Structures are given as structure tokens and as C-alpha cells.
Amino acid sequence: MSSSFEKYQKRRLISSYFSVVLSIALVLFLLGVLGLLVLNAKKVSDHFKEQVVVTIYLKDSAKEVETKQLEKSLAMADYVKSTEYVSKEQAAESMKAENGEDFMDFLGFNPLLNSIDVHVKADFVTAEQLEKIAEEANSKSFVDEVRYDNDLVTLMNNNVKKISFWILVLSGLFTVIAVLLINSSIRLSVYSKRFTIKTMQMVGATKQFIRRPFVWKSVRLGIIGAIVALGGMAVVLYYINKTFPELNLLQNPVLIGLLFAGIFLLGIVITWISTFIATQRFLNLKTDQLYY
Image: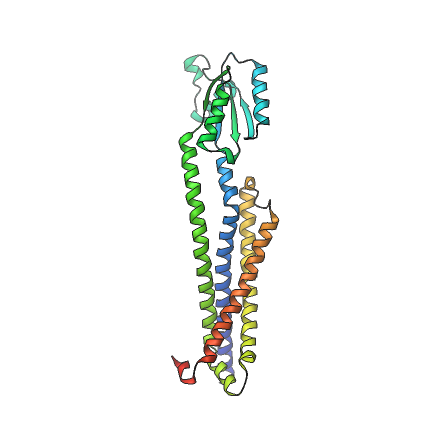
């Protein structure tokens, strides 16, 4: 009978420890993923901004030397990330592939123009900067037209500002939630030992002596939970970097290392503080108050 009760108690204890570790790991994992998002928010927004294309259409009368000169000057400009020359033949093939039919069969000629697709650096993707770039290109006598999606640029910049604001708000809110959830799990774990705490106190053990094993046990659980969370973060980071290599998420390993270290230390600090407060509360209670 005694052996069965001991096994039952041991299973309850293991289940309690498992739930604490799982709570800590889940909360720290979500907080870590949010941290990765915060660290790479600008990089992600820059990536989408740099997909905006400014297309410079050239007149049929444009000489090859003029086109080459324009390409060279664009490549050297501080606002340009990359350029690509698209001949009218290439443009016709693209339209044919996109529409599934050759429009030149109906027209008998190719009405398209040679063009240069310019990918602008993210910092210059604003309505004002793109207008200046368009005016500069239009000043060339052999340039027919400059096109870009101004509405898309305005919408993108507005959304980036809104998303950045809400990411910061959510980061602060989620940090508070993380602390409260971990604190709640630790308190429940200590609560199950409240009678043991009071018994030790009644036989003369000091508060520091009683508190120490609880604190170290919780810290160990916090370390295990943090390691599980970091493993999950590493898997997420690996797959995102593999799926979107153009984002270069591993370009700054120092910042990522600091984030991982911060999550690990957070798991230790929160569990230590939570256990200290929880044990202190039960140490200060009178015996008859333990039943409420």
C-alpha cells in the first residue's frame, strides 16, 4: 500500500515538473520567435520594398551607346540595388508566356519598347525619392517613359510603419504575459509543497535553508525549459532561412546569439524570482491559512 502511494506521488511530481517545463518552454519559445521577428522586421520590410521595380522605357531611336551609358550610371548610383536590361523581344516572350498567346500574330509587329528594370534600395523606396529618380531619368532625351507603382509604394510604407508599431506593442505585452504564465506555473508547483515547507519551518529550519532547494529545482526546470525553447527557435530559424535565403537571417550571428542568450537567462531569472516570491509567501502564512 505504501509502495503504491509512493509511486502515485512520484508520478504526480514528475507530471508537475513536466507541466512546469512545458509551460516555460512554450512561453520562452513564443517570446523568442517574436524576438526573431523584431530583430528581422526591418530586413523583411526592406526585402519587400526592394521588389518594387522602376521601369525606364527607351525610345526606338535610342542608340546602344546611350543605353550602355545609362545602365552604367544607374549601376553607380547610390540608390540602385540592381538593374536589368530587357529588350523588346524579351518583353514580348514574357507577355506570350504570361498570356498564353502571341499578340504579334495579330499586330504583325512588336509595339513594345526596350527597357531597363531598376531595383531601388529600400531606404529610397518612398514616393518622394522615386519621383526624383523618375524625373532624373526622364531628363534623358532617349527615354520615352518611366513607370512604377506609386500607390503600392505609399501603401507599403504606411503598412510597414503600422506593423512596426504593433510588433513593439505585442513584444511588451507578450513579455508581461510570459512572466505571469511562468510565475503561475511555479506558484502551483510550490503550492503542492506548502505543507512540507511549513513542517520544515516548524522544526526550526531557517527560511533560507527551506527556500534554497525549491529555488535550485525551479532554476533547473527553467534551464531545461529554456533549452527546449532554444531548440525550437533554432529549428524555426533554420527552416525560415532555408525557405527565404534572400532574407539572410543568419547574416548577423552576434544579434541572434544575444537573443538566444537573453531567452536562456530569462528562463533562469523568471523561475528564480517566481520561486523566491512563492516560497516566501508560504513561509509567511500561518498553519491554518495553508488550507485556503
